[in-house]
Length: 279
Image 1: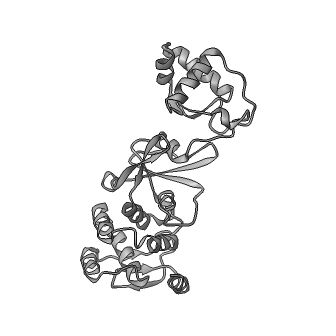
Image 2: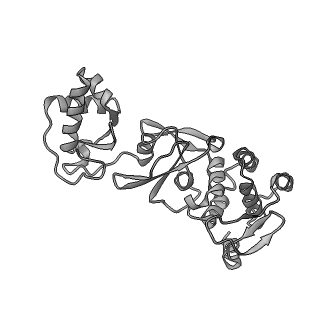
Image 3: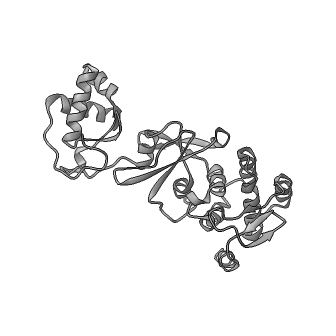
């Protein structure tokens, strides 16, 4: 059976039932479908539906996203079937529950100019990272406490879940390694400063239960002039834990200490100064 990474050979012709199936599904906007959809459309047995799916995959008219889940390759893709559905739509079918998150969401909202080569997906399930149609999908497992703050968004004929603007930034402060690092996260905060509610970000951070998010946010708000409202900052300082947290959780645990926010500044002073000057 052809898989999601093999779409190079020329596609073979279609039988009457194969043509009828693809036409019917396409007319209904079901570019992604399951074996059960085949049985329903053709009013056939599940066994025959599996055989038909295998044949279509071998002929390169569909690709396998995962076991029992398929993507139609339309005529517009040409005989060599160079085509893919929007990567967020594909992600929505790979794991459940889910939401598009981290660097992918930052880029979606225009908070970063960087376009990630990987689609980042938050979920409460354990799922291995994988590649589908030459796109990498990284599944980040969250606790149920952190799995909130997302909303449905229309992508073509599909509705997909994506973190809202404030939760996107909270997630980035929590796991900057999935967002290009703490400096890219800081740039995203700056770019988002007039499009988000700082109060909502703080509320989300408190709900997530990781005070390191509050510490990093407070420090960056003050040092990068991110609309640092004194009342909000005061409330944030009352929330933080006494232990020291790293500004950049992915870097070596060495640097200077900031006792105001209980942060280990493990990013060089030169880097921070360069960042300040760029805003």
